[in-house]
Length: 341
Image (cartoon, rainbow, N blue to C red; front, side, top):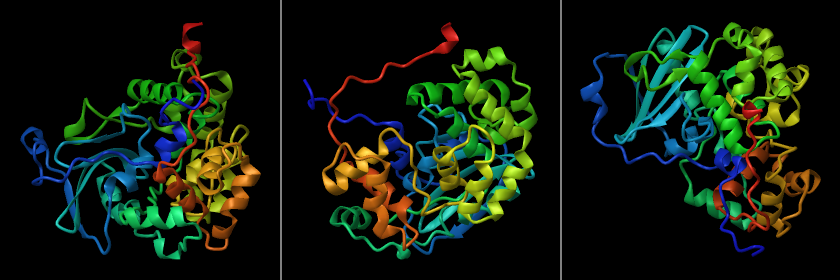
């Protein structure tokens, strides 16, 4: 049966892929009928094509992510703990403009950062394809831009949870911890969405709750060390991605894999490619050179033409979006659950 399994989405392909967003309908349909609260609003004219599913997809941590969801009216909803407090944001693309509405203490901050979150600081024109596959994918996906959230901890913590475990385990832990210890989302999403806990709340989570969520002591300890330095880590938003990664990696338990996964979202880092991943080197190697057994060194050599452009992460995302992955030759990894021990 070797090689006969259909490729399944891995955590890497999910991160590099997209979220299915329904076609945009009339504003507020069908959500408007159930929204008794009116938030702050902003309309931003888009100077280029935009695919919400591609741009915001990397921010979703699994289909049950309590901080992210899509609705039938073509809107993407997400929550965030901003410097001004928790907030909920709804954004949809209609008529060549991004229509956004936000609630909560962090609403104004979320609306101010809307262009950055939708890729205004990204520069896709800096990418010059050196492989036919990447040129083709780029042509077919003109709406791809790299998001920049400006929030470090909300990307760092789920990245730590994803260290050395299966997709299901990581997403389950994130879902359980945010729903139990986070705050209800401000505005009409209350009871259906949650905001990530504040740093002090993360620090006060009892050890048995980490265990019930399936998080081992090593990952829990890394998160606890990070939240104690939350202010210092959030300051890295004002640094170049390489310097930001260096500061993040000072925290024991945060290595190159975790720091890259974080700054790709918080900084919109186009060149910070993920190394140390179980699947990514083989996928890149197979797509660009037919080498399913490629390691990090081979992957980086294949992406070297994009290093001068500062676009290695974008190249890796285009590889993932191509769907050209090596066929499976082994059974699916079994999910563990230390919470049952």
